[in-house]
Amino acid sequence: MGRRLGALLIDWAVCTLIAVALFHDQYWTLVVFAVQDYLLTALAGMTLGKRLAGIRVARLDGRPVGLLWGLVRTLLLLTVIPPLVTDRDPARPARPGRQHHRHPAVTQARSRPEAA
Image (cartoon, rainbow, N blue to C red; front, side, top):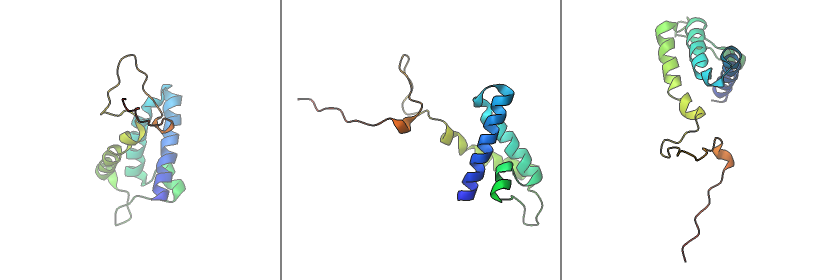
């Protein structure tokens, strides 16, 4: 699992750089990631991150997975990534005039003082 996560992080970083360079906006990263993952996995059997991690995606006969299964793999992967990279909690909608914490890991929970 460590190599796969490392490959994913490398691919995500590269796609972020591409999105910022082409669109001047990091919010296009998911689109760039989807396109590169689909095309490179379907046609070559590996992305840059997978190549550096020594991972190859192939059919049992050794050939690349092809366009259809590459699309299926990419769609399944995209159902996992958005929840990992977004920080919006759907259970707590943002209120107007209230700042939404973008980094919940640096906040702390406190209990309310009890009423006397």
